[in-house]
Image 1 (cartoon, rainbow, N blue to C red):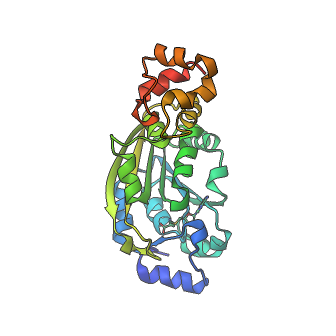
Image 2 (cartoon, rainbow, N blue to C red):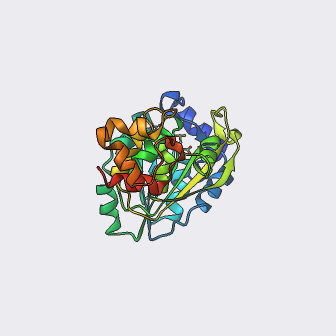
Length: 271
Ligand code: SAM
């Protein structure tokens, strides 16, 4: 089907297949073709790019990605969408839909495979908001050779993740691989059903290989956010904690969010 994202086309498909959006899978379908095309414009995908999409839904974004990219691989958890997608994406011959929970995908392996045929592999998605952090962590931790990530998330999440003065384990993980930016805000009114809040496109340019030891340090450092770095890291470095923090030039009374990515990188050397 052409222009799946047009409201009339979306409604036609949903009704024909008696498909009701379910909260369980964070389903909010895009119903504005113009907005979907603008989302694709935020990316630099071309015929030499393989796009990995998370959650095609009924295919609104997938279709537009297929016109721009060399290949699109879309992971969808909801098997009920099989018949809808068979019809809606029938003409998009460069799209491969895989019914699998994205959080169980061996991304490193998948990206390695596509990098043999395409010069770039990018992730583009209108994310299911209930697992935004899990998905971003899954991508980062995978150490897959991805060039960039462009995902729609809740606007306030995008604002936090791009605010240089806000720190959480996820912002440090993002800093550990590259640069995040907020590219575009999107009204809640262009979805069906409409979510409670507005959305935004968060882009992350992948510039560095992720150090997996960072995850271990960060999880431990943020066990109790109100506690000092010394108290939190004691659980990991035991009686060596004071010595290690001194060697890294970190004040024992600092709170975990006050450290820098460089501090955390230094701490990984002691694991
Ligand atoms: N891309 C469509 C659009 O923009 O209209 C749908 C986006 S909707 C916000 C999120 C999609 O992700 C749904 O199709 C949902 O079923 C799917 N989804 C939810 N959890 C998933 C998971 N763990 N793995 C793969 N897909 C998932």
